Length: 233
Image (tube, rainbow, N blue to C red):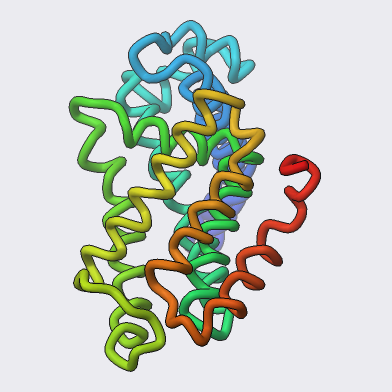
């Protein structure tokens, strides 16, 4: 009897795998399609019909997984966090000095913004008002916390200088980054984003780096954004 029951259960367990795979593929298609719509239209103008069309799935399939536009937007935000936070951590860990880590993180984030619609959509949704504000803003809170943790020992030992606390300085730097990328989005569809970030960090060199270390810091900035040299000519 136990063998018969086991034999009946085995094919059922095997059949779940392709179903789960199809379910994951459908959810992924909705998130990717919705991200392109949110990136292009913003949350307010985006419609479920637009998302269905962009995702290439049926309306019934979408509603099976997501009951509202808000649920879809939250899924996009969660996916953006899943893609961006590990990238920022990896960029920080790959650089020896604190200033170089900060520059590397901003370059990695800029590359994601230019190349990944999910990241662009998640960042755009963070700027939207309403119920999405808190979950979308968590990415910025995590980024500030990570940056503040890098800055604190550098400020304490005099590697970097500032009259601001580590947290206030972290908020300011990330705020500058956000402003640069928003202006670049508005004026050039982010074509000049790397140029804007280069200039932002050159300004930060004068504000944060000791005079004796500024030539090295400028070299770090120029190296990080050297692929954009053609745009500056």
